[in-house]
Image: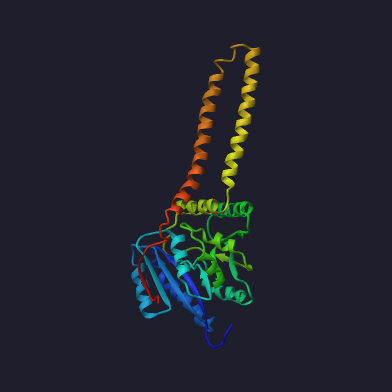
Length: 318
């Protein structure tokens, strides 16, 4: 590290209808750098996803007073992942904190610990959520998902790790090589490799406002991660199809033997079996067509080469 020029750390914050949290988030990050990291310069990039409240207005007011605050206003809601990734690609820092949520569930007080590990030579420092202040069902589903991903992906994606990470500029340079229309960023970071280390922390409950990412958004994020990095669902479909086919052949053979022995005696009782089989196999086919549809949809979105986001307005960028 050089002494003549402060190193720059970028902080990315995605926003959608977070007017009650914008100022608190800005002040919390500013306090951390002013009091605990005075030897570093920073830029705080707010990525607004076409909020319909006063979020963008507040960001503009803060950016007018503090040039370290930069604002990207999207033309519409492109989703948190794409908006955040665009902010990451826009960053200029020697390291990037990706991401600090506006609701401060990922505490900015962890940034100095991330920077300390970064100074020790780690290119990726990720936060490990040891506990989440949410209901047991959601926590259990998340843990199961992370472990399934780790089991079936051919590189290591740390369990219980979200987007709250500090990454070196060498990682950002590598991420710029990915042409991904719908990025699963935590997976892309893990795929880059380099030296990594995790720091445990408590994922806090939201104090103000309400979350804009419901169950459907979590399902989309989870499916995107699975489809982007593993063919496991397709392998399951193939194995289940093969198993059912073998079982059907065996069942047909048994029915043939019984039919020869007990000629026409089981014709009427077999109708129930036929009806059940039709509905069962129809359901199986529709389910696996759905899996294929997810992959085909991802391919379709990617090959059309649409922009990651469309920016309506930017503030304090050179």
